[in-house]
Length: 409
Image 1 (cartoon, rainbow, N blue to C red):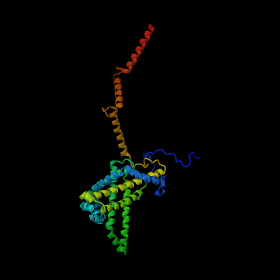
Image 2: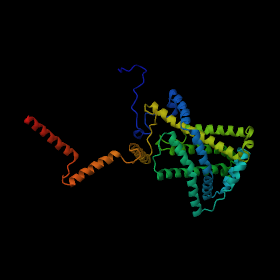
Image 3: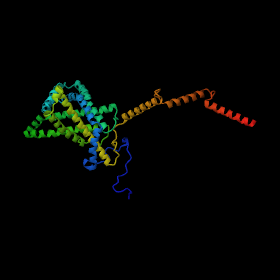
């Protein structure tokens, strides 16, 4: 039997370098949220709130808001271009804007809609459209890249993917998200007449329209959840457990975002005084505040997923108290950056040791001078003895003189 008293915790395992972390789907981890213990859940919730503040997620949300404003119009241009490739031009987006008008405060809509309508004219399909689409995709990807940097901070991992690799991955992810957005708009706007035509063809008529008007919201909800799950899974530089189209953090983020949106716009319409405070800029300020709230909620969902992974690892006995035990997707770029930083620190240290005379290693310079002096003496054939040899000869002569003096006495 063990000498450890009953109820005493197991010995603490040695810390594990994340580079040597176990596989993301380690069999020791709980597979389902239902397998997580109550104590682990309490730790996860408390840790999520603490890390949300420690990682500066409110400031990160402000940065993402800026990136959203820069990306939204190129994204709409790319979206209209994608729709024009399949025969649906800006009319689809125009119908969507008509439906969205009733859900947005009038002050915000009057500011945003003219800018949106000005970009809804897409050129005919051709080389120019493809080039414009690629350029718009590149600009729109700035939000996804910024979101990836925020996710790296949440997971406490440096970006180890090279410039070409990370940009190509996030560029393709942006393209996929825009394709899903085009599908969502098609489902929301264009599918009604299609459902009516199919219903009339099979003799269902109004029943088919009613069923589809309910079912399309579930389809849209699936697309939104899937897009958020893609952002959570593909943007950080960590190999996460197997992809789940619906993570706990994504569900929480969507629910909280819907509640926060409803509450915010209710406040703006009924109690807000933004027009009196900001005047003509009230609509822009309201839109920016709403985007900031949504981004903050998205980051909170990401923090929840991250801390759930920590809780799973701790429950499995992995040393995840300080760092998540997830392997990085790539470390080449981060290793190179770390090596350059060490070299920079070494140059600074040499500058301090030499009182600003040189950035080179002073001990290296002394060794180089000694080797050079020895090489010079060797080239002279030993004709110029060094100081040490001269001291030894002098000591020998002094010893002989003293011995002769004693004998004389």
